[in-house]
Amino acid sequence: MTEAITVARPYADAVYKLAMKSNGLSQWSKTLQLAAEIVEDERVKSLIGNPMVSTKQLSEIFLEIGKNKFSAEAHNLIMLLAENKRISVLPEISQLFEYLKAQHEGVLEAKITSAFEIESRQLKKLVDDLEQKFKRKIEAQVSVDPELIGGIKVEIGDEILDVSVRGKLESMAVALKS
Image 1 (tube, helix red, strand yellow):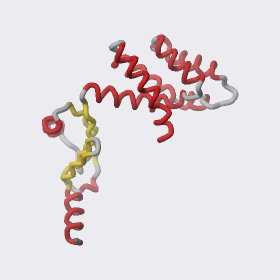
Image 2: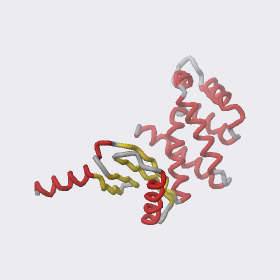
Image 3: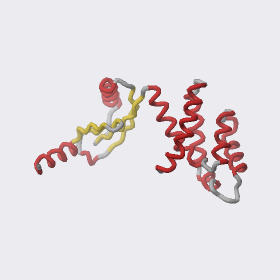
Image 4: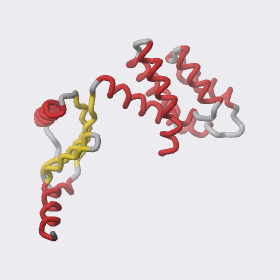
C-alpha cells in the first residue's frame, strides 16, 4: 500500500495543481472517484497487468466504460497511467487528491468511534464542538466499537481525544503500575 501511495503522490499533486488552475476541484474529484471505481471493478482488475491486454487496449476499455464522463485532461491522465503501467494506482491518486482538496477547503477529517450508536443531534453537537475547538470544518466518519464500554474516541490527524470508559480504565491501570 505504501508503495502505491508513493507512486500516486506525484500524479495526485499534478492533478491538484491542474484543478486549481482551472477552478475544477469538484469536477476532478468526481472524475477521479469514477476512475477509482472502474479500477476496483473485478473485471477491470483482471485486465490490469494481463500480458494479453496491451496498454492501448486497456486504456480504450477504461475510457469506454467511463463513456463521455472524462474530460480531455482526464483522458490524457488515463492514457499516461496506462502507458506507464500505473493505472492500478488510480484509487490512491483519488484518495490523495481528496486529501489535498480537503486541506485547501480547510476541512479536517475526524474518525469518531463510539461504544453505542450516536443520535444525529448528538453527532451534530459533537461536530459543532470540534469545529469550534479546531476552528475548521469537520467531516466526521462514525463507527461503533462496543469494546469501548462507554463514551467516545475522536481521532483528528495525529490528535486523539479518548473519553471512553476503556481509555480511562487503561489510564488508571498505567497510573497504578507507576
